[in-house]
Image (cartoon, rainbow, N blue to C red):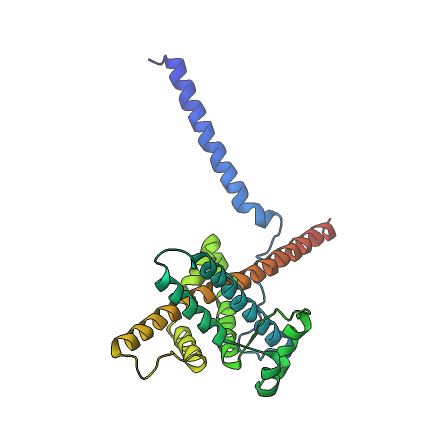
Length: 261
């Protein structure tokens, strides 16, 4: 049991603590007005309606080639690890079909120089190409898909969405892209224009249906992987741009504060 003095003291300290927290909250709420701080401007993204320059298109082409090369590399590791595993024939068949699909999206530089409708966009990959020519070039149809994907990434990786979704921005944009019907339709058109399902006249209807089903599953799997990896690259660039933006805003605020003294 508390004595009367102890009870009064406890109520007093409880009251003073509540007052202290209230004053602290009001202090931080009013701090921007006391320091004459203004709301920072949002990051100025490149308008998605603007036509991109040749170097910008070349960068998209280069990054897209990196994405496909990375996926092919990961697939080759899975295939190699499955070669001698018991009962892995169906798994290897699925992985090999995915590899064939990815290969159909690529082309050689020489072929593209003679056939591409946008040869200037090839220069970025050529400029970064090493002696082994290990960088991957992509077909024009593939480039069209990734150009659309890049535009959508630029639209959704915005200051407004960052403020709204915070640390969940990447998950939000991923869900938006993977569930974009138009983008997926464009992906299917891209694949069907590059890749033909292989079967012979001697194959029965069951084998043909199996091949179509397998390829359809792989279309979806590769779509998810390609979109996710491309978005990771775009998100890294967005993060760098945003940190640069914050650094500039901090510098502007500091200079303004110094000039007012």
